[in-house]
Image (cartoon, rainbow, N blue to C red; front, side, top):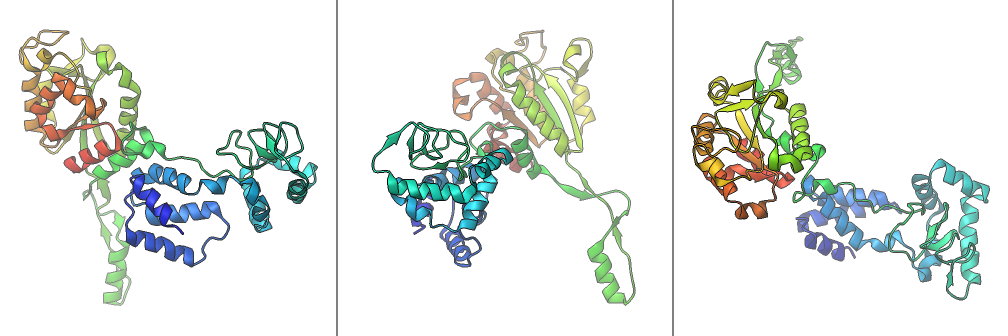
Length: 394
């Protein structure tokens, strides 16, 4: 009976394998969840989703496959009311506020609510719209659709409108994890974690529990072992494009910067405008009177550093290819020259572009930048793009 669900997953782009589907069926056969839609959802997601980037796709497929669970068709209401009472109570407790549950109790409690629904189903003989008693639409009755009542039972409605019905579970909370979407700080952190590299360095000041147990077992007495503390050895140099065409992407770059600061212990940064030239700066307010020569940066940060440029690479082609082509000052050497020098100094170089990848071919300067740093070194600012980039740097 779950084959249509499996088919929905494949259509939605969730790469669930037949083996995983069989594992899902085995879990269900073990009766780990009974009459618990949320539990069923989490078990299905745990067994069928391997990558956090596919969670939103899974949510959409789950909603498409089990949309009938959210609503109660009028012809099936009596059967629905035969569900275990404790399950219905738990769902009510989960999705109703304290004030709403107090209102239900004031009207006679949850038992009274379900009993009244059963009676009105037997009494009502035709469709009803509006009002506050009969099962229908656009009213304030506790039973029906497209209306409002704090202790309502939704019947025959395709989606929630006030988030007030007893059963509401179809919430897409992971849409920002889709690997085709521009992303926020939370998702950037997920991607940047792939670049973490741990190295042994420093004093022997961390207890080696496994080594201690092994040595104690071998020697017959307590033999405490230590090891160098684990430290994040990745060194990242961020080069951030600011101003002009980058203004629409300020928030995205800020989120990337914030995520990088929290993920990497060794992180330094400089700003540039449009393309890398002979000078960069740390504070935009002092970009003209407190510049750092790019040669100094190249000499100060060794080849072990990973250099990440963040910019849209959208400018006049002259700004990349021609000496004197910069729009704010006279550059004696072209931006292309400085980009190639940076790649020579930092073999692990990456350019993150907030412009959608499908539009890159329409901007000549993007093509010039890609030629200077290497076509594979430019990735879009999406979860998929960052994942590709971290693999390249790693």
